Length: 182
Image (cartoon, rainbow, N blue to C red):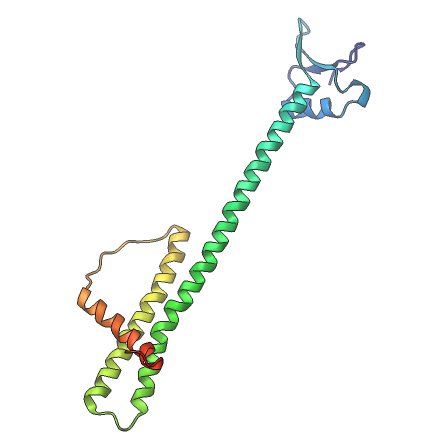
């Protein structure tokens, strides 16, 4: 800072950084805070009127409004992401429970000494399919973690629609039977 001029204007050196100039302008005594800022040429050949403090304060207010709007938008986005995460966890717990229920239900059926060999083989196959389905769900959850970390590799796998439908029916059959539904 070069100093206060007689008119109350603040004279600043032309080689001063904008942050230092703004700090000095805003830290002036109350009675001179609305006086203009003057930037001096370091070679002392000229003086320039830069701007008065109310323009500086208006610019600062505008920047604060933009910052507050940005914070509010990011808060809304964070709340939406948190809600999506909660929904995801609810869906995943349901997705995990479904094959696990089938595994437990068919494992209990295996304890029944009165079931015949073909029913026993069918129950074991259902347990294996649902175990594989459960592993796939867990792999999908891990894949989501990889996506978030930016380390996901995409792979193309063959799918049998008939097998998929059969798997869904076998999983849902246990739940339907438990609720005595056809």
